[in-house]
Image 1 (spheres, rainbow, N blue to C red):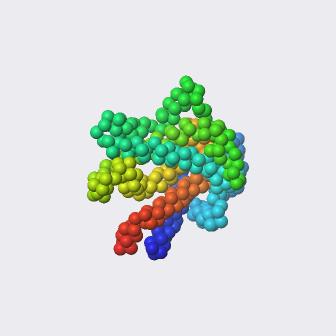
Image 2 (image 1 turned 120 degrees about the vertical axis):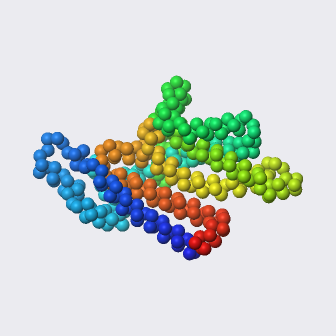
Length: 325
């Protein structure tokens, strides 16, 4: 068991090390941020001074060594535009993005799991076919278009929910959250649903496939032969067995919710990391872009590691297979 954990930690560390190299050089070969920061009236001497102040006058490999040294100290550079530590800017927006991702994930579970299980238990019903058709739409419709339609319907035409912003927040142990206020939930409802739509469709298909497979297993037939109620069979035998692959996929999908919330945050003016990233790309603010990508990479690796370890606890066969490999 210990060797399994050590091997997974080593793999995670290797992935992060490789991504540090790819992210730094990938971002630094795109464009020249100096021309985004200077005034057209500045002479060559002033341009060179600006480049020196930002450390952009040094060779790329020297910049990389300086970046790695700062990385071990928790310093990912200072924003060219804001003049603040890039990691501080990212972390200041991270709470809003995490709120959005958590609510979207909860929506995927609350809506997708029961609908998918229903479609798996009663595949021949018309309602089940409608659910599966709806899941196809969830995969197909562009996120930006769905967001605009949600704003037009619920904010403009009906006036039920606000179209932008985070809403009222309260401070809990130094962290700002909008999930403890009614106004905050009104603001997060539309962007969270927009972000969750694809995951709801994914959850429906996963739950349906898992339910259809579980219902054909011998343990379900044996439970019926013993005279157990159908609700008990579904809750004890079916739900527990389909949750292992679902938990695995959901863990990884949570990382994608955080990473790919850029479109949703932009449409709904949600003050999260994604909106900050888009602004940084428009201004070629390299330290902020690198800090964002590194935070997302670490988040993905950590979530993947946690899911991998939890999966090995839930299913000992994973540890046995890993030991043989």
